[in-house]
Length: 278
Image (cartoon, rainbow, N blue to C red):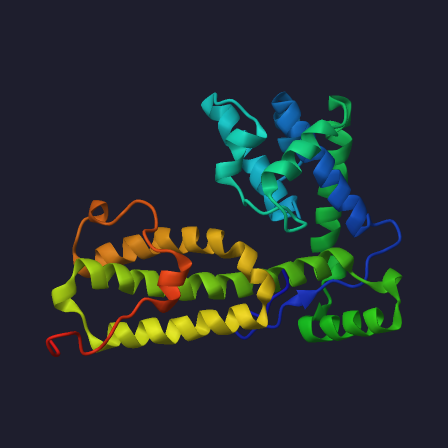
């Protein structure tokens, strides 16, 4: 990822050389390796000897690679169904991850291709992070990429890094939605389990974060299909935070989110409460 952290301008790669694998070639190689690892888990060790976790460009693919390695060490069975709860439930095309992984298994290449595919991905990752490519700041790089896109100069695009930047932007938007839902859930849990401690600040926080979530969903309608995952991720954190703020044990709160998204967004949390301010 190309970022500007701590006031230091991060450096961005130049356009790839002709010998560098294209984005499609890398993506297809990842798909083949994921299918092969799920179909023939024994090849994982051979792939892991060449490929690092960070060499993957697609989050779901990397997740499968990491989880399969863990399952092998723990002696657990490997399949798309067993791996799925530990990885993203959304495929790169936005569809369900399970169907995507099953399709990759069905099209898995022979085990003899494990090392060549892994080497291709490792070399592509090395090219993306090579110091020879890191000589321009993020602003200049982004401007040049935008100009190349507008002119249709696709050969000049730094496709892999451009794809990563776009994906990271999408991830930031998702994280904003998850954060808003998390804060609402935390206050709703406190509201229900510590009624004597209800405060005006809780009500205000809930109202503000509801507006944040509404605006995000209005501006980015495609986020709606990720709401189940956002609610699940948000609730796991909200439950811990609510326990910390109330002094109650985690077990006091439901293990699964007890609220529908409609309740999260519309349930009344009046202030002052009935009977006057407490």
